[in-house]
Length: 114
Image (cartoon, rainbow, N blue to C red; front, side):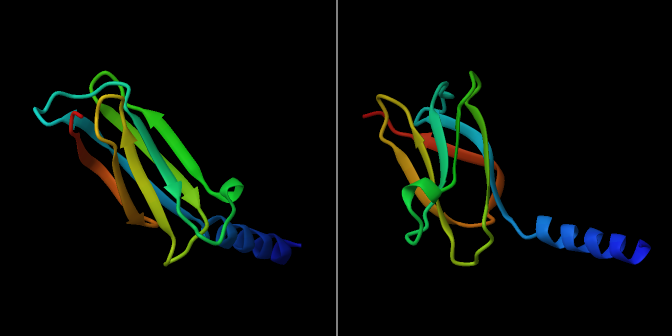
């Protein structure tokens, strides 16, 4: 019985460790350095082989101090790409394609006024 317990424990550990994670946190400001509140931040998988319904999306809104924290758990893949974007009315949208498993906790995004 003890043997089966260890087999199950190892199996669960391997399965839960088999996921990818991407995290980006930081601030959004304009060209003068003024922090932007209520900007929409989105992290989305960009898998051309998956339907729109099967894409993973994580969103947040910047706080009064321009800070954001967005993360997403996805299927592990060395070729998976994600789209990181920031939008705010009156500003030119920012968008960048990044590799899966990207991690940055001090990202500074600058939006330019239209």
